Amino acid sequence: MRFINPIPFVRNIERSKEFYETRIGLKISGDFGDFVLFETGFAIHQGSTLERTIWGTPISDNTPYGRRNLLLYFEHDDVDAAFEAIAPHVALIHPVERQEWGQRVFRFYDPDGHAIEIGEPLDLSSSDDADLPCS
Image (tube, rainbow, N blue to C red; front, side, top):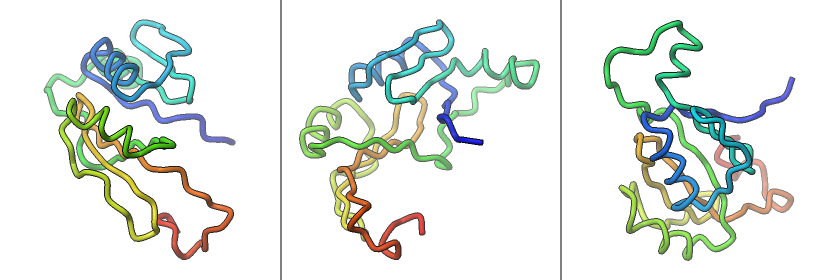
């Protein structure tokens, strides 16, 4: 068993594809209409289509997909440059901040309200496991 990737549901695949390609800088490796796969392994899926595939019918209400229960994590070698390029175009959660474990990150929402974190790469080889956020 191995984990492959998360697939967030999106309301408008074209809007979200443009957001992740233009604002985040991901490259598309496969565009299958209602499903878009990026080179990093990250993928998005048109929510109404995936709802029909999984549950047999789309959810009838317009409940937002992003519900503050999932964080999409990306890394960038220059967090400050990423912040300058992305921040004017998104709803920020917070600007670049140093976290308890020493990593600098900023967070914001994508068009569907999914929380996104952009962080500087961590050198896990020199980290004490007790300092990591997931331990």
